[in-house]
Amino acid sequence: DQQVKQNSPSLSVQEGRISILNCDYTNSMFDYFLWYKKYPAEGPTFLISISSIKDKNEDGRFTVFLNKSAKHLSLHIVPSQPGDSAVYFCAASAGNAGNMLTFGGGTRLMVKP
Amino acid sequence: DAMVIQNPRYQVTQFGKPVTLSCSQTLNHNVMYWYQQKSSQAPKLLFHYYDKDFNNEADTPDNFQSRRPNTSFCFLDIRSPGLGDAAMYLCATSGRFNQPQHFGDGTRLSIL
Image 1 (cartoon, one colour):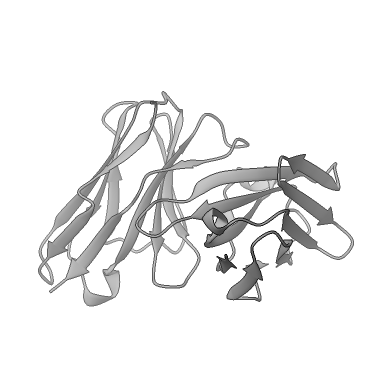
Image 2 (cartoon, rainbow over the protein chains, first blue to last red):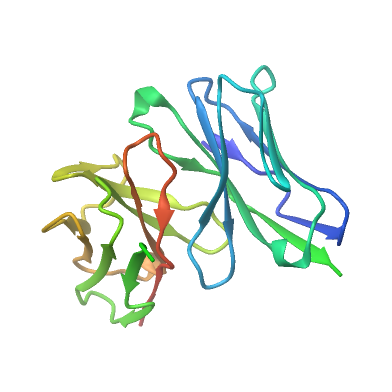
C-alpha cells in the first residue's frame, strides 16, 4: 500500500516557466513533508520541507504548498532552469512513527532550454 | 565538506556470495539509515541506527544485516545475495529523526 504517491512519472517544462510537481498521501498521521532532488548517479539531495502546521514554505525559486484536507502537497519551481532537470522525490514522516521517511516513487522533471 | 560517503559506488557479487557495503559520515549525526532502491521505485527503508540502537523494518529480509561500530561508520551485510537483491543501496544520516536526511551517492549492487 503506497502511502505517498507521485502520480506523474515525468514532467516536461520550458525554461523560464513554472514547474509544478504533485504528491498525494494517505496517512493522516504524516506531519512533516520533504522534497528531495536526485541527479543520475548521485544520492537524493534535500531541497525543502514543510511542517503540517504550515501551508506554505518558500526558499528562493522553490515553494512547497501543503493542503492537509486534501492530503496533497506540491512543489513549485519558478522560474524553471535546465539545471533543475532531475528526479524529484516527495517524502513524508509521522512523529509517532519515529519520523521514518516514506518516499513517493519520484517524478522526472525535464526543463527544456 | 561534511558528507556521507558510500563505498564502493559499484559492487558486483555472485549469487549467494556474501557482500558488505560501507557508509561513512563526517556530519557526526546520531541516526544512520540504509535504503534499498530498485529501478523507478521509491527508496525503501531497510533499517536504521539511532546511536547504537538498531531498528529493523518489519519487512526487511533476514538476509540483510547491519553493523555500526562507531558514530562514523555503518555497514550493510547481505549474507546470501539473490538476484532480487540487485538494486541501488542508499545510506543516509540525520542529526535527529525530525531533521532532513543527508544521503550518500549510493552503491549499485549487481548479482551474477
